Image (cartoon, rainbow, N blue to C red; front, side):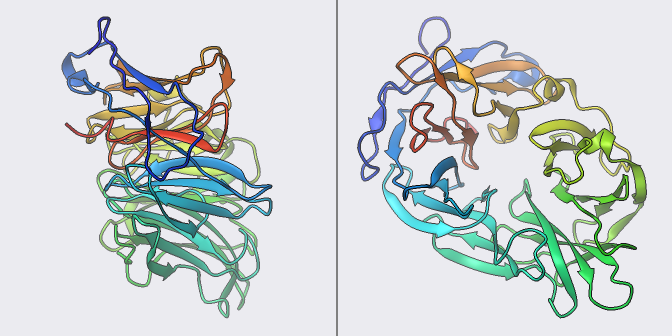
Length: 397
């Protein structure tokens, strides 16, 4: 470690990753607290970064990237029609396969999972699949999760990561028969992409042909799944058994509270549920964390203070679940073209920072993420299709 608590790695070109990636990429460590539950959360060295440039067709925009548990990297791009593709790379930067899947792309111990849909949210009869992709970008498995279009139509969905590996998809659809009431269903998939709940889980029925207008699912570190769905001006809340998917008695409520206090006033916000290390689940709506649910609670609670102070950040469990890596949002003006990942203990103490810098003065920052294996992937603030990553920088010791 350098004097003053910093450590840095110089740029290293990735074989096969393309030329022209900007130089001057560096990372340094600031250790602020190593006592108590901060112990071991800040790493003591920084590996050299791998630099690549992704080539995309005219009219496409590069987006974020992340790593799986094997060290493979996937870098995303979105075309003018809104379709998303992902270029897979080996840890050393050599290019592998190209694959198409909707965002978000969920890191797994080996490869990634994502939604592949034949139409947009709310279309009459899209086929919705959860696809598992191998580290080289090849399709390892596809599982159809949408209902039979002869039974139900107008599907909306939400995909979330399972912190133990795998994913949870929550869906709503309107029945063609009877009163055209809507169903809320869920399916959990393991790390290989295989269904953990054969046949899925029936969460609830809503006496409306159009609602819920939005829904979201998440999985706690204890294993239970949580599904939130809009119901008139309120939220339905259902905690599901980790083994069967059945609603847990006493932990489900219809119209539990007004949704405006949990997800905001928007009629169809983009809602995400993110697990916290204590078993609770935080609610993110339109890019901002707003509330949380204690384990098996049907009413929301205030966010923990450390997350409320960083409500526009994202976060990942880091250093093998020893704490959180709080990741700053993209699109911020930075006088020194730096982004600071804050390492926070389970109790909310700020233990240290990873400071990522790009030479050349001021810039508008790109995305930054930590993948399954602790690799940190950063998008350049100067050229959105240039990236660098620090292999296993925040891995478990």
